Image 1 (spheres, rainbow, N blue to C red):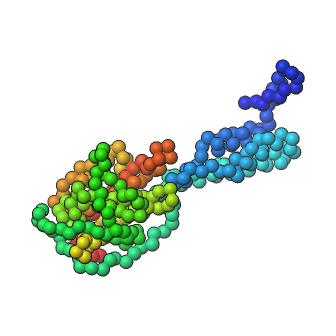
Image 2: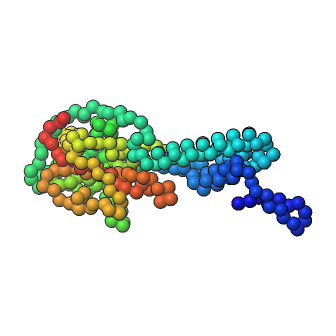
Length: 269
């Protein structure tokens, strides 16, 4: 790469740039072409761009000053790139600090159901003490394409009405958002659940269906295990679903789904 200077009409003279200018130009081009994604936001590091441009066009500055600025631009760009990689490869929940746990809800605990045709009240609220979730539940159906609907708000979760009611035989399915451009969603910390954690679903009659987490899995969206999540089970179970994995700015979505598997228990912790 070289710069061109005109020293006479119709005649060009090529001059080789100094090594600090080469470094600065490289840094500038990298920053312009590789915005750093932080969570769901794509940002450009403006101070670094300004510094790189200053070094790039500082041909008349003293050599030591140019070299120092070029080195600073290179180090800062490297640090910013590393930070972006770290943020993009951490689970989303790790970027927002510790979870504020909640106490378990109070109310009569429903016993396990053994009959397929037992009448089960509708679910109205969800509490997950270990990750600080307390939300009302809305009804979710299917889209025209046959996919599970998502809640219209990131602040609430929804029960899929095509699945059993929580506490009935089979896998009840509850879905929620992980986040949006304004911040964390109701299931932002879902991937932090661990086997043994408890999930509480309050029902329309005031009773609580209590579930114990048995597994937390992450699946690529094109490898989603539909049968394992929605298929028949011999007991009353629960599935909690949200997005997860890496956020792809070009697609505008996460690449994975997080699924929590839980089974009903007859008492609390």
